[in-house]
Image (cartoon, rainbow over the protein chains, first blue to last red):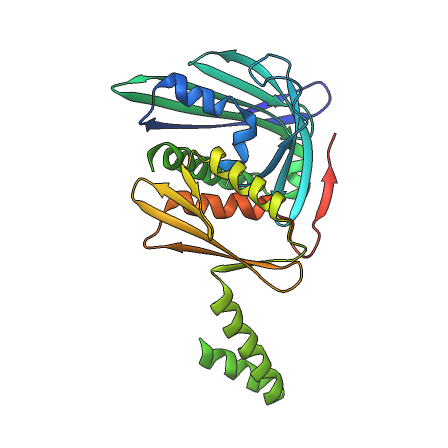
Length: 156
Length: 125
């Protein structure tokens, strides 16, 4: 998707993955909504620190450090939605703008877990730094890895 | 592969002694691969980081004299810790088969402990 803003052109991309997990939605969302667990399943995420209060509360914020190609990139994020046993969503508030949404619903004796990541970056930066298709391919692969990691955490 | 490496070394006229050192280092790195070496080892910090990682990965564990036993659904994995000279220590992962969760634990611990060479840090606003 391409959007034209008043100042610069922006590119919006979306990644969606769904997996079945052998745990009830409440347990899945309890685990996922604790952002301090995220470095365990998001491969490039090194740390989550400085959490203000409980990540279940809308407006709670924290600092994150991503590790990419041996370089540490730090930024901030905040909770935008939380519904117990159903949904958790947060957005990054520095660098590339992105929104992460996780939902779980009952599926037999387990859950159907869906994660959605919507991210945007000014097209000019993308054009200068890296080819957009390469970034999207990398993020798609990262989406597959994250889904497989979450599945392994609940299954093994 | 070794033949190709030797051929490449031969074409660049690298001295034989240098090639021998390179091969010895490569062999040592391959042998040491399943082991992690800790410098300035702090047992309290190590235990805190490992136990925090195990909780983050929902891995039930038992702390033993040798290290940790991880009770995974398809078999146990052992983390064996051995003190070295000075403030050093060696960690070894022992497992009978491949475990995705053990791979995730290695990846998480790699992120938690600082490497020998510091990384470049960038703060974005």
